[in-house]
Image (cartoon, rainbow, N blue to C red; front, side, top):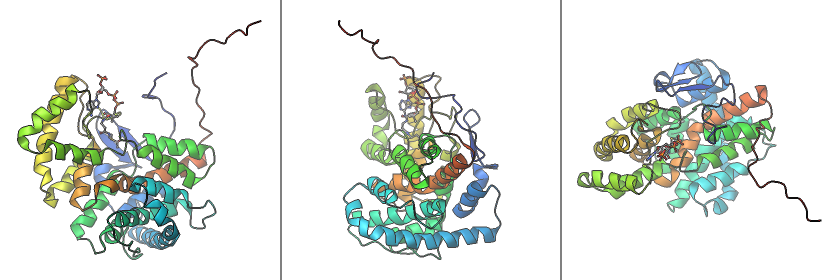
Length: 357
Ligand code: ACO
């Protein structure tokens, strides 16, 4: 038994492979570095259908996603007052839960289309602005930024976000994907499965880390405080957000892809963040020698999302937007090939009491 299920294979999948020793991520036969050059719609189609699609197949998917975004916008409108009383990730949870199982649009398509619409609307309301409807002619990343900011994004920003979405699209049997597969295995349906996945993603040990990464950079403040701040956190037994990973024992390859995305965006944070990164890795090596605690995807996620103008409370919803491609593909795979997931527990409670005579 292992309490964190580490080392346990709980599913077979054709969707992605994480090689934690070599620092490699493969998405259905494509290395992440290759996949990151495609469009998000192409990678979504690759995960769903299992082949690198022709350009027109990606166009067709983009068009269907655009139409589904319009359906999602109409669906969200009456629920936005209630959803916007919550944090954006909680609001997203509410809105996704409200999609009926009887929805006519194919559910995997609807789920991927709905997240950018819901997340952008929640972001706008949180900023005191009215939601902006989707433009079905745009691609997912571009339309999300257009809905959020009510203006056409620069090509650089749209591409940076798109690369981010691909980078997080799928990642083996991570906690949220496992949650999705457990729920799918009961035949509860795709929407229930992805709501469960979102709930798992929300935790700070999984998808909730990038906001705290920026909080950390803010708290550190300036270069002169880096070493002292980091040592203080480690001495207090707190974790440095954006470092360490359950599977990667070397550098998370997604961190490098995203570093390549943020460097050209000339965000003032990047040079400072790279100094914090170097100091954190060195301090973690001193504190936990041999564990090789390295930068994970969340560190550069924080910088990339901030650079394209996404507010911190939307970071986890935007992660969910990318990961929805993987969650839906896993749910489809689980429904087609999997069995009910039902492990055992070992009882460590009190011995059975003998009833008094
Ligand atoms: N800062 C300080 N110490 C750390 C960190 C960190 N970021 N990560 C691990 N450690 C320490 C632990 O305290 C532990 O020390 P101990 O054995 O002396 O108690 C040791 O390293 C191993 O930690 P575990 O918790 O066993 O490692 P696990 O594989 O469970 O943790 C995790 C992985 C949860 C990601 C962890 O590294 C962490 O909490 N990181 C910070 C949060 C974060 O960045 N989350 C995003 C992860 S990426 C993603 O989910 C998309």
